[in-house]
Structures are given as structure tokens and as C-alpha cells.
Length: 221
Ligand SMILES: CC(C)(COP(=O)(O)OP(=O)(O)OC[C@H]1O[C@@H](n2cnc3c(N)ncnc32)[C@H](O)[C@@H]1OP(=O)(O)O)[C@@H](O)C(=O)NCCC(=O)NCCS
Image (cartoon, rainbow, N blue to C red; front, side, top):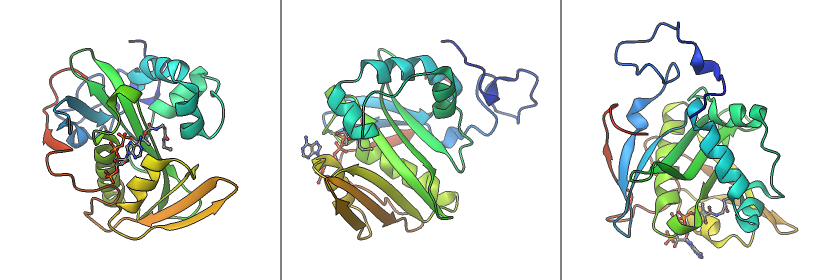
């Protein structure tokens, strides 16, 4: 994979013991998990890294119009090196993203991220899952892990904007631990949902779904 020269690309950087050479400084290995989904398939979930840029470009460019409309609330964004660098180079604190990778083919099948929102302690959350991997609990698991990461980093509220007729997102919000605030206007809904410390936050705690186990730093992904 091509590395687009993100901030983690300096080979001279001194890394803490145990830090894998190709990973950016501060890469939170503890968010590397194998999740078993409701249909029995497994995915590797891990924090995003700069070398994910080519795969992300392909995913955005090949996504169907409805997915793009729901994810970006508009048309296909222009996939520039700057956009890819922005999306794949995060500080894992104020900006955090997780990818889900199909182990057999090493293909990315989902991305979830949070970005700073207007108010301190709040973050905007977004998620997209490849159609063939939907409705088996993957977004639920990604948001659970993302909420945990956010909560551990001092973020107390997730906010977001979505098309009001987006039923899976409505279901995810309805299943949150805490009641969400929601305002809908002209087909666009805005929500905010508190993240109690250590909570699963968004989505239900499916029995047998989002069943995760930590994975060591060796291995693919
Ligand atoms: C929204 C999205 C991320 C959900 O991903 P997912 O992995 O299918 O979600 P999950 O399997 O975790 O299911 C979450 C909830 O949505 C429900 N759901 C899933 N697909 C559904 C569908 N087609 N119709 C109605 N509800 C659906 C699930 O039943 C579940 O609700 P429950 O917990 O009450 O049973 C996915 O549909 C997607 O990528 N859509 C396009 C991009 C988008 O809309 N992003 C969100 C805006 S940023």
C-alpha cells in the first residue's frame, strides 16, 4: 500500500517499546479486536492508519450513490490526497477512526470516526458499512468501541447529522444507553447523545454480536 506521507511516516521517530515500525506514534493497539458478527463472520477492527489511504479512496470512489448520500449528505466528495491524508491521519484523541477489515481478503468493509464538534467535550460521529456487511451488528460494534475510546479521552457527548429517513441510524440512536436529543428539519435530523463513562453508549448490547477479543500487534491489518 502507498503511504501518502502522513504525520506518522517519519522513520527516524523514536518509538516507545512495543510500537510497530509502520504505525504512527500513539497508535492505540488496544483498540485492535476481532469481532464475530451476528451471521458468524469475523472482522478485524483496528484504528485507522495513514497506509489505509488507498483502500479508503477506493471505498469512497466505488461506493453507491445512496451510501454516499447518507454518509456525506450530498454527492461523492472529491477524493484528493489532502482529503485522504486528513481522513487517515488522526491524533487518536480529538480525532479517532476505526476500520473493519475482512481478514481473508484484507478488504476494508466499514469505517467509523469521530471529529471535534463545536462544544468542548463533544464530538461528531459518522459511520459507513459496505452493503454486504450490513444488519449484522457491525456499526453497533464500531460505535460501541468508538464511544469507549471517546469516553476515555474526555468526550462526554456524541453529536451527528443524518437523513431523517435513515432507519438504521434511527435504530442505533434509539438503542443508546441515554436518551438522545433529536431535532429534525426538512428531512435532516441532528442528534446528541451523552456518553456515560464506560458505557456502550450507542446501539444495543447484542448477545452473540459484536463479540470481540483483543488481538496482538502481529498479524494482518
Ligand atoms: C447506517 C449503517 C452504518 C448501519 O450499519 P449496520 O452495520 O448495518 O448496523 P447494525 O447492523 O449495527 O444495525 C444497527 C441497527 O439498525 C437496524 N438496521 C440495520 N439495517 C436496517 C435496515 N435496512 N432497515 C431498518 N433497520 C435496519 C438494525 O436492526 C439495528 O437495530 P436494532 O439494534 O434495533 O436491531 C449502514 O446502514 C450504512 O453504512 N449506511 C450508509 C451510510 C450511513 O447512512 N451512515 C450513517 C450516517 S453518518
